Length: 77
Image 1 (spheres, rainbow, N blue to C red):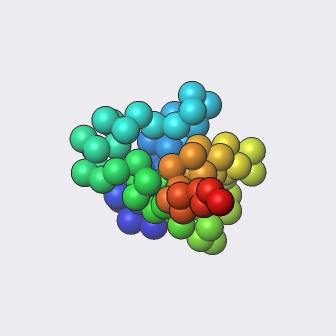
Image 2: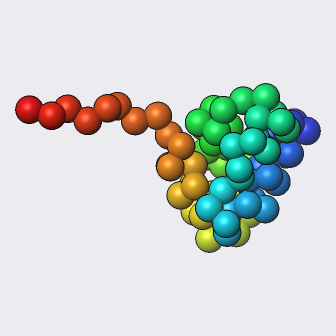
């Protein structure tokens, strides 16, 4: 895990109990949208390097990430 990935994970970890990092903070710190940020955080959490984090913490971060995941628009018939 490189320094940027560690910083991303730390921001996600700190803000996890509060519903996730604020979009403005993500943009200023990393220059990306929340969707891109959380996609990368999700990828980081699925690596072996992060297995030492508490399971509950990982799940909370993933729950926040799911809110920003790119979802297809609903189809109405």
